[in-house]
Length: 203
Image (tube, rainbow, N blue to C red; front, top):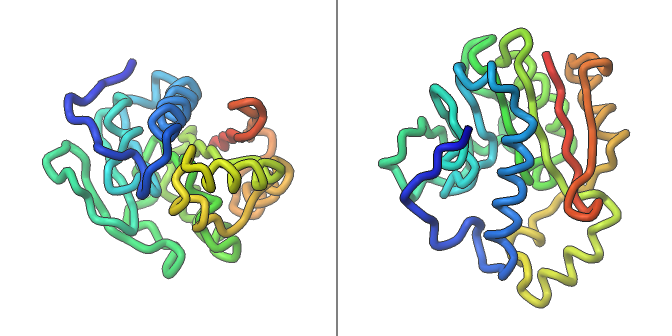
């Protein structure tokens, strides 16, 4: 079940890219398909949602929270906003078990990999038992294609230039394991012609 906002962003990312609105819709559809309905009665935290939290305006949850290093440009939305730089301090200012779902859509590639275990450990802490972490990120092999797409403005050059590290599915699994998630509760897959990966980790 999705809840579509009447407010539409002028841009779903910093910078312009012809395909960005379509890619945002595809990530949103993928994430929504991965969320079990029973989790929607709880709280969701979207990490790195951007100044316009596109995904959160296109999903249904009882309560919605976002963390981003940018300030919101739509403060009237019914979303609780926390402006934090998780590369500086990977700490989530919430009680243990506070969320039923945490999403990181096209975010982890922007983070310092030395901070990822700490951040995933924090996600594990703030998830309720049975809660779910959902990640999407470009596949490592797609980096050359993404840079070309940025050069011709199909995707946002500002976003691509800030990619810090590219992942494979086994490497994401290693990070999950180091952060307290059980590997038997981790699932992986690809979408967008194998250029992007999705991963879920259940607490």
